[in-house]
Image 1 (cartoon, one colour):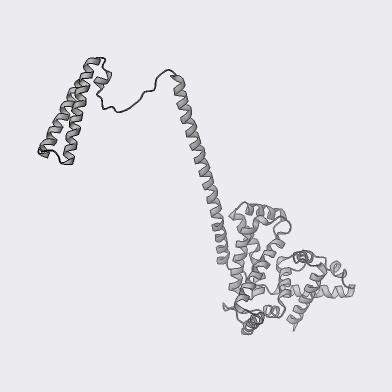
Image 2: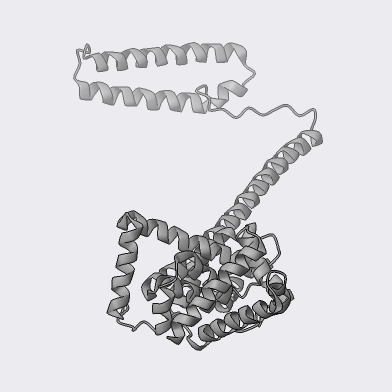
Length: 175
Length: 177
């Protein structure tokens, strides 16, 4: 390894020493470095080198995972944004196609369809009065049952209540 | 020896987190850095540990390398790793004198902690003061020029040259006895 440092020792030493002293100094340096060359140190174990490389690879791994996570998060955000935009666009598109069509309210009604869609107001009013009265009666009986105020047998009352419900249902679905 | 442009490519790979490029750096410099630590500590186990720490630091700090001599940068870190080790060791031994006497007792045993014999050079190196020994090892293993070493140590080149000359001359005399 002598002269590996690419120094011009003569030029360097002669800046500070006489030519004779410089020559002696160069000899000292070169001889000592030769001694160092002739006494090599042990080499690091292959296992040590393998461990160092493995540690480095492990250390670098989280960086890649974080990068991957960022990509996934970005992709998810973009996908979510696309879904929202498409939904809004479809909604607007459908509204544009039928601008005069009223909104259809989809609800569950307790009033039978036959009454709701009927044009016979006089007949429907009567039926509605009967329906309301019977519903109130059932409600009262149910309250009595819950509060224990009913004088009749509970089982009989429930059976009677069920029969009334079936009857009401039959009457009104028939129209 | 690797060409400087090839080394530059490997360093760019390291900066991009390429484990393969770090492996190349380990292959290129592990032997020299290990020799540096071994000659300074006289202990194989400690040298193993310091070499591992060095390359862990290299991974951490690679993005702080801003060109110039890579050897100079790497051996500056090596020197810091060694000094950190000395400081932690001194916390245990408390006094420098205790450390020196401990080192001398190790030398008289002519044995390493793991059973390896210490060579004559290691014994004679231990007779030099810490700074001179480190300077000689830095010069030998880093393969840096006197000018680069002086710059690394932030001292005039004449000072570095003088210290190294005296140290090498003394080492030569010790070895020729």
